[in-house]
Image (cartoon, rainbow, N blue to C red; front, side, top):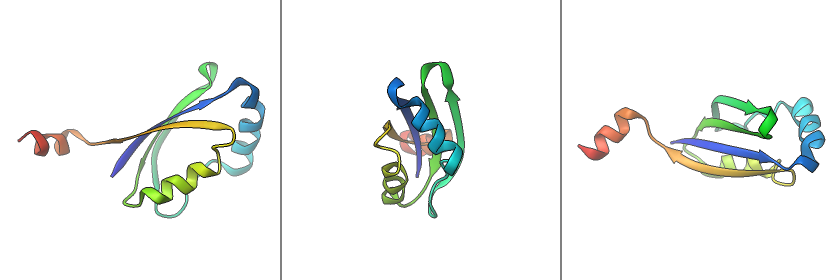
Length: 87
């Protein structure tokens, strides 16, 4: 399953987020493949495309950040997958 994630940084946590990102790289745990990550620095938000068969692993990854970031997680499908859905 692929998931598109939008993250948001509250302005008061900007420096803390930057420090944690520089220290950890914000990499996913085993079982989650990060396919891409894009940052919109002026808007304090960004997007992550990841893939996993274990949604719990995504939850554990984001649990490391929920004290300073908020997340919106959406399961997404490719053109080929949606073609199967709609026939």
